[in-house]
Length: 140
Image (cartoon, rainbow, N blue to C red; front, side):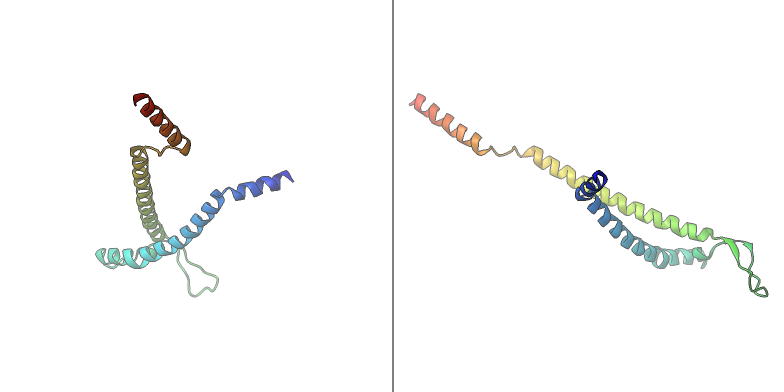
């Protein structure tokens, strides 16, 4: 029973839920990046390189023989690697900007927390009031 209670405690910590949300958002973001690279970024790059479609670039090791039904094309598709590299750079750039923004917000929050002194607790406020009354009695 100890393993199950540890697992339940692990799940309830909150980090697992945050991780799950991150994975789901990451999967959706992957689809967005795929469309961005394949249909927005690569066409202009292909146009600049005289119509080269990177996704179709490959080194053919064994050509497809239409005369033989079992014959299949064997190729190293390095164009897909180029597309994946561009996708990686886009994701890395977005993650960098996100981390940079979060760090900036944390710095601002830390500066505000350091600048403003903490408000006195009710007990401290009462003690300060009593001290001021005693000083006023002694002076008067």
